[in-house]
Length: 125
Image 1 (cartoon, rainbow, N blue to C red):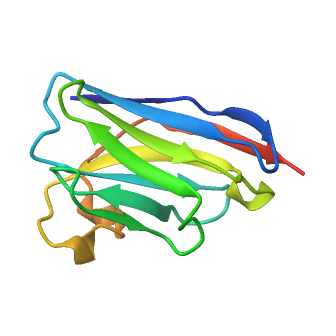
Image 2 (spheres, rainbow, N blue to C red; image 1 turned 120 degrees about the vertical axis):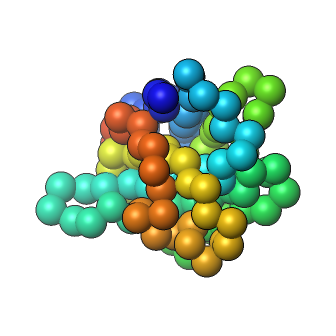
Image 3 (cartoon, rainbow, N blue to C red; image 1 turned 90 degrees about the vertical axis):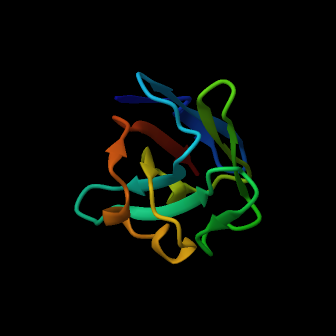
């Protein structure tokens, strides 16, 4: 089981990045997908989640209206489109899978079983 996150980098405030999370050795069809982020010295923070079908999405208030989570089950890949980036979005971003059925669990890191290795996003002011 492997999740490979990519697409991070350095961008100026106001810019955009698209993160990808490719799954291998298993299919993600039955899993909800979440994106979290973490800065040194702080707990991992929920960013966004999408249910197994892609029909429902959930966002942290801090990114609502700027970030969009999506998935392509045929490609076994998930995405996080990040627009209007701010310096406070700087963090390592992680993708993860969850078998939780209730959306109330999606914002909790403990609900996720498999995690990608993280990709660094740095937003300069």
